Length: 431
Image (cartoon, rainbow, N blue to C red):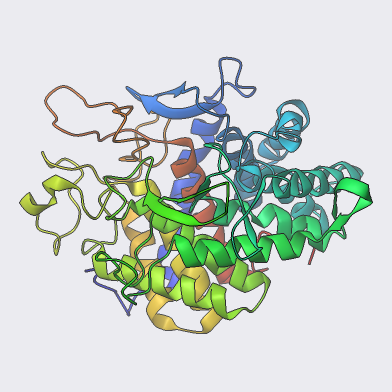
């Protein structure tokens, strides 16, 4: 279980955050700014490489430059982030084949719009950013599959039968587009409400991808999540839990858990809703109860080698049995902090600070300037064997991912804003 440090304050971490952003600068500048050989996904021997599946990580690369500018005021990164947004992000706005619009476009165009509203980027960029966000939200909402009760969900890139837990954070693209006054236009000029689709997607994610200890199946533990929910597309009935990147449908892939923690907490900030609150609290409680002492989780709570490890001790990324996933910790820490802020509950706030402290220090912070990654010991796809296992090691460790690096930077920015404001939300540019 996570050992929450109730004496830790946000101010205690600011020196570590500043150090992280100092290291971050050179790592951003070391990457190909335009993804000539594909979007950078994860590191191999400390160098970022692409992995063709979808281009879901490009917004994290571009967004990292904007986060760096936001946190430090270094104008090199403002110009880099704006230039990259103009040159490489347009195809993501109209990408009809993925569920990743909130990852790619809110992390870039959304950040640009927020910084414009704060007077830190010139207003000349505003019209383009607003149009991109409107179109992105509508395109994301068009990936719609109905279920038997007449509601629906945004289906994953696996096809209309597939509801991913990841998409709960990505559906913030619908929230932003709605707040900008946009709708999805359907057949016969039907105006489709983006907020309603966002709410239905969130409700069905909470219903089918999150468990509440109510006896739904033999593995129904409150707060655990399943990566994928499968539906019969002929009649819309739920068929089974599934997973793409976890160990099994009956254990919890921790990065999927973290997406749910952060996604529901952010939606609760956007709109006070009992479904959002219930799902955010359940998943955050499960994370606290199932994580090692320092709050950095192993990649799946049911991974077969965990019985060899002391789960009441801090996580050991160099163990011989199962990898940790620091990216899940970076995402989950922000979820804990946002839920604590939304509810005024110090338990979640202090848990988030405790996890952040671990990530902002070695062995997780990459202090070697020759390593292009920022957050070490991230895992991408353990079942597919995509992650590097170094000579002399038994499991993946020592490498980074673009989403892990991005979310460590975002966590750092959140802590800076929590200390000195203004408060940072994904909808800050349209509030």
